[in-house]
Amino acid sequence: MMMGQTHSVQGFLIVSRVRAFWELLKPRLSMLVAFSCAFGYSLATGGQVNWNTLIVLTVAGFLLSGASVTINQIMEVEFDRIMERTKTRPLPTGRVSLAEAKLFAVICGLLSLVLLWKFTNAFTVAMSVVSMLLYCFVYTPLKRVGPVAVFVGAFPGALPPLLGWIAATGEITHEALIIFGIQFIWQFPHFWAIAWLADDDYKKAGFKLLPSGGGRDMNTAIQIMIYTMFLIPLGLLPAKFGMTGLDSAIVATVCGVLFFAQTFSLMKTGSRNSARRIMFGSFLYLPIVQIAFLLDKL
Image (tube, rainbow, N blue to C red; front, top):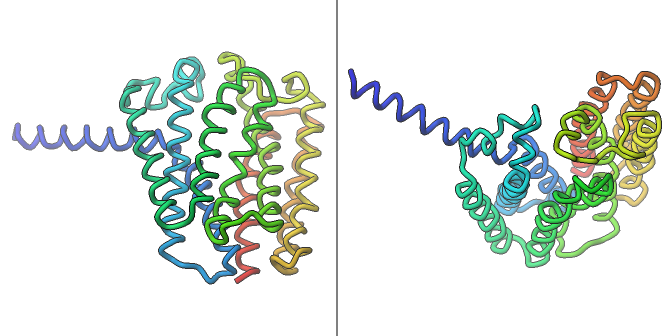
């Protein structure tokens, strides 16, 4: 009986440890990055994908993102301890030590780059390194400096579809810049909606991510509205340049208009519920539009 209980406790501890490292990877965010990499690759190949490359690229994208967000959490562990939304993460709670997290980040990062080197090309590897460095060592410290952090962070945040395109073609073309541009602009309403919701927490840590002096005010709401509005014409560019067709252009326009319409409630009420709807709208907009582009291409 005692031996059975011992095995149960050991099993529970192993599962808890695995779960802690899994949380460290921020799986939902990393899956979105992996999907965007796969999207860029599949769009560039016109559906004529090498499945081995696609699978490896998806895994490598997930690991690259996981390494980056782990480094981010290492650098911000003291701030995470004082914010409600982050105080239960693996590092603040001690479920993973800093030394373990550093080793984990190195392993994930190196494995990602090795996979990309073997299955894609040197340009993809180089851009992946640039993405990681920008996110970890430029964007992360800038979060306590001012709203410029969101602009800087939008570059590594928009690189995944570009990385996928480069993995397929070995070059940056105007088509690659279009899908980069859509994801780049998308991040402003996405980040600012999150920052609106987490503003009180962010102020505890000294994070300054909202525009217009960092206030949850009309100026910030208008900027969210403007960037969301830009997504409507941007969503038409793939069809304009022959990358996709009319069907996806219609889907992108409808999604863009619905996303844009959500911003008026925020300007009218300034409520958390309005900001939350914009945040969830951003989560829906990007994958739906990207899937529409892919289906139209296929």
